[in-house]
Length: 507
Image (tube, rainbow, N blue to C red; front, side, top):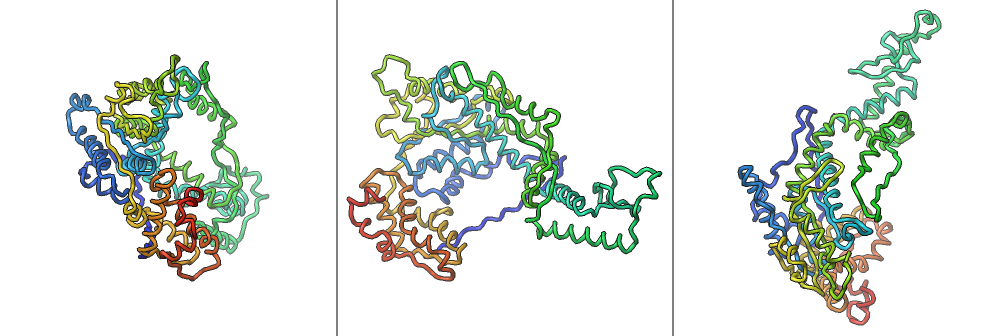
């Protein structure tokens, strides 16, 4: 079978500044748990129990919004603990759920935190990361809304810079050589000449003026049609460079007693540090100026307000490797990397106010998804209070050989589809047969059994090794068709595929 790459070309919607309504407030209101599960099936094979659990959690958020304020305030999310070996889809389920709901999402590793007062990041920093993620998400949505207006404004600024470089700016009275700016399709001089200097000004003939007008029109068309994107132009852009300010506590841990970001923002607004002239290609200048013009069209305070609301009510925090912070026992001193982190995590999960650069943010209604392999520990070895904050527990199953075959062929982002698309850039047709997929799946499954079980990630190793030589020669095989069948897989992997002693060293 041959897989064609999926191409997505979503349209962008533009609105004027006075109509910047959010793209999503209750995006999941039309998605039932069954439909949410179906959407997850497009990217994740198997693990139906985990999908059902997160689908219900997402739907419960919509149900909570239908309640009265007093009742809704008392309905807390049912946090989920995902238990299973690496590579079976725990992280992917959380990430796809957040994408589906267009919700702020942050993934953290539990092992990176230490108990408050010790060297390292404190647990509350995950909430600050959540706020930053939410603001970035909302800002990206708002920029899409004003994309057309910002693009037009950026093009006007670049056009004005090009006219100045080429000496094509002109007064309406015909005088030339004076700088001007474009307003409503007309050029306005930045400074008018003195009457005493009228005799010194050169005036072009009507023919020269017509030629200049034609040159401006041609330049505008070239710019609009993006035929001169590689050309360099000097433009004045905001100087975003600011001194890096690090604020640390007395023990070396992170602290928000002084708002470093706010101080940097004030520093960046100081006189003489606002703009600078840079020489860029038109393509580079267009991207930078587009963002500047979009910022002018957006209400930054409204963005922050909406982002804080979505972080508090729609945010999803994925805490990975939670089994690694189970106390090993037998220690008389404080276990700052394990049980101490559990105690600090407990306060965040059960609901508290965390100070951020934008004010206090509450975590009561954030959804926490925790995951761990629990090879050496059990969930019951977590401190009892933290166990109670993850009432929904789901065990994910190890992947079988049939699962690997499905992973290679069914998901929208399947590895085989990715390789087909990559080879098409070299004008090489890549086709995977059923027996070829089965052989790749068999090798991955055997390698997981013989060595460490790393789940579906083993398929990346197998496929990359199988296609390594073909990828290297692809630029010299333009126009050819390559069929990945069982014979080719055996040829590329050689005796490694059948020798269990070699598998453990090569796969």
